[in-house]
Image 1 (tube, rainbow, N blue to C red):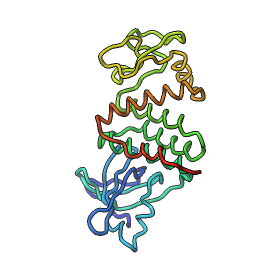
Image 2: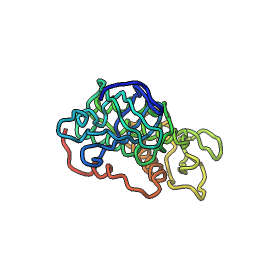
Image 3: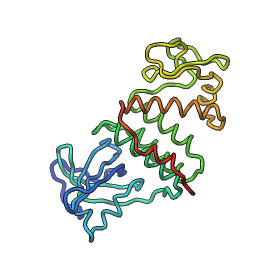
Image 4: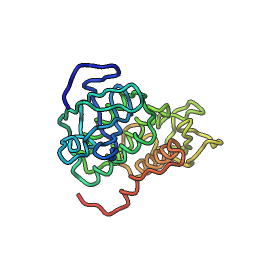
Length: 244
């Protein structure tokens, strides 16, 4: 793809990642993208699925890209793909984790809604996944950044119904609309969350078994709430045997 003159609806050198792709018509690809300044969007890569095209190898998940496109509607047409260096998810568990992050973005994030802070969190998560054997803290932190971008941020150490700091001696509840709460109410999805574990999470401690379990339960409830009944296919990957 050669870079030419700017036309109406054209964009140049936009930082982006492919979060999903599929064949389109005979020789093209439809790619779902997560971009810095345009959020989630879809584009056609014409001829990218052809036998002589190098684009199929370039338009890979987790690969940092700079993209040019044209088009004023919801579906753009790519005109240039520049590949940049980035971390590689070589371990099986890291790859599965990256696919999970991509599916969250693809299924939940609204189209054409920029989230620069979330884009930065995604880059950081990919770098950490490429360099660690312990993916759970990385996933939990990205899930919370993702929830915050959608307006569902909360603090592990604050009960929003009382506006009081969580006490290590008490247990708490979780409501996707409110966050951590002290009392049971209609929106509560989880109960009996130990205050001690919540305080550990507030301090960034994901090493303790209790705090890991609590963070996973809370984030599972929150993502299910945001999905509104839609499945996440990537979750099934974590139940399959895997190697490093």
